[in-house]
Image 1: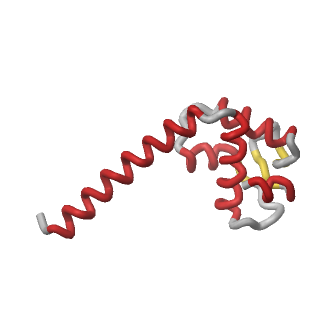
Image 2: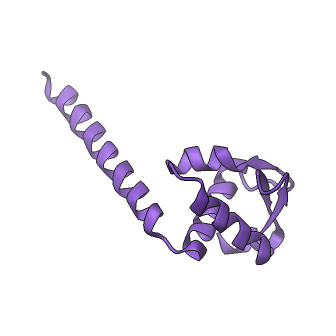
Length: 103
């Protein structure tokens, strides 16, 4: 194996390790911490554009979360704090002006 191929293989393993560590960290966040992470992810997914609805399932997949309950709780907290607006029983959300400020 060439040294460049070995470097790419080593980098791929590091990315997998970081990814699994990040998912574990997301699962241990408080509801508010996850709501703030959700706001950042919504910003990233929509490119910061206003009025863009995003299915919560898309964000769940992007964050690599298996259980949707914590994400739904975070989305509900964000709605209560006026960071997000909901459509369809929290299955679609979008950032509000306040939500764009917290990310």
